[in-house]
Length: 369
Image (cartoon, rainbow, N blue to C red; front, side, top):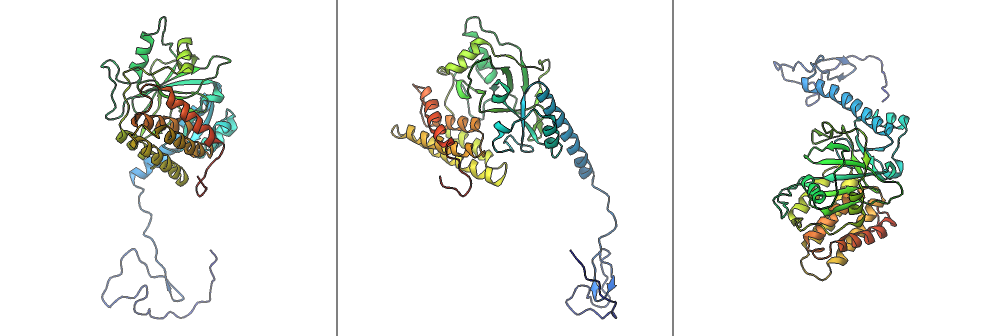
């Protein structure tokens, strides 16, 4: 802002009601000093106040976290994995078209993570990865078997019932919620897709079209960390797991349908994070899933799921919602509505059909549905 410097004039007494006017005998606070130049009175801040300890700690913590995340992103790239930034303190992508923009270029990585402590997304498709997301149950979510209490025990159960199956040690990451990501290399020449609870209770997979949150990322004050004793490189996905993932068999009887209240509660969290447009998109997904989960009449549920998947696909195509996340929530909402009890693959086929149609017509804020 430019300031016009006028010649000095004889100071005049301040008018009543103007800054600096006070009655006789009134003490002017120390934080105001009278500096007369022309007819102006300038407010001057008190001398340099000591920086609060919390402020000093924050100034130190942010560069340290940024350096850790940069180092972690570079390590992923060195091991042949493609990374992209997530929002600071969140799990949503920062880049539109994150899968095609995911990179191993050290210069791009240093430039990106040198700006801010972005969380790390590891793009499974370009990296040739298949990750098993072994979750812990949400409140009120239970299996029908006392032996199956989370994704890890579900995987153990699947291995136990498959002749010759063994859970091969591989790169394993502990999540803030207490779950695990088991990261494998996809066998050469195979096509692997994402799944959402179709393998079993609290068990999802991330492959082409999906990503996992990388080591060092922080969500709600807790970090994703390499599990003690874990290999630092992914092993090849075992044949028995590849068969399960590609065939997407009927989930075990233990996998109970989630309650509508749980589906809505998890979606509500999405609407509180990210940019304004991402929150808008999350609100649409939440509304679609809420309406679907509320349907209890047999007629029309599958058509409603198809429409919800179509609208979610539009948001995915615009880069506002992660496809794997959208498919997971749509699956849970469909299960809450009672779909897939006898034909579990019905849900997956319907979501795939609607999602594919929506991906061809991206939708952004202000656009038509």
